[in-house]
Image 1: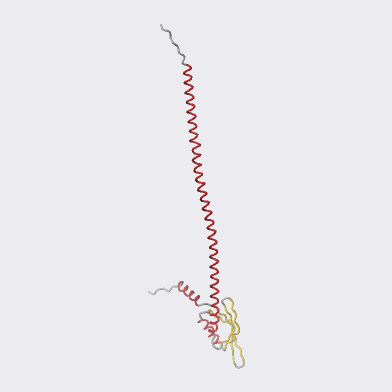
Image 2 (image 1 turned 90 degrees about the horizontal axis):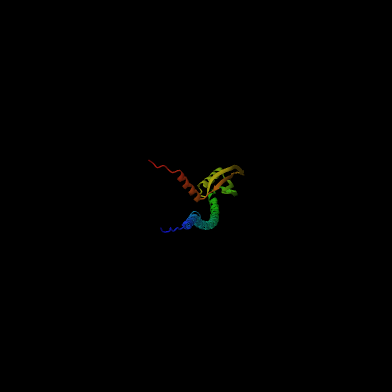
Length: 204
């Protein structure tokens, strides 16, 4: 009977068990590290990249807003300059019109005076002229007011005072009347507005 050979496998099994345990722990550590990368590092990098992109967009928008603000300031300055120029042009036009209007005013004032009427005083306030005068009769004063009504440069004559006086055998009428200054262009504009406001109904 041959002798039995006995081999102790306990040390080898323990070493294999220990090796498998270390491999398992290594795989577990690697999985944990990979999970950590997936859960923390990669999202952090991704959202950091998105944040950087958004910050770049915000900086671009801020730059464009600053440019727009400067342009708005420039536009407002140009608008003020334009309004100032328009105001000056209107003043110049009014001065030119008033300069020519004064000439027409006195010419028309002389043309409206009928025979037998003499002016003793004239005062103007705004577009209202106050006239003091002497007429040979009340009818002459009426003729004077009719001439104002027919004039293109005067309108709305109003008799304030009229009283009779005598100078020997001759009787006179002292009068005071007011009349409003006007212009043909203004009257034409008022007539156009009146025609537009009150159109004539067509005949059926």
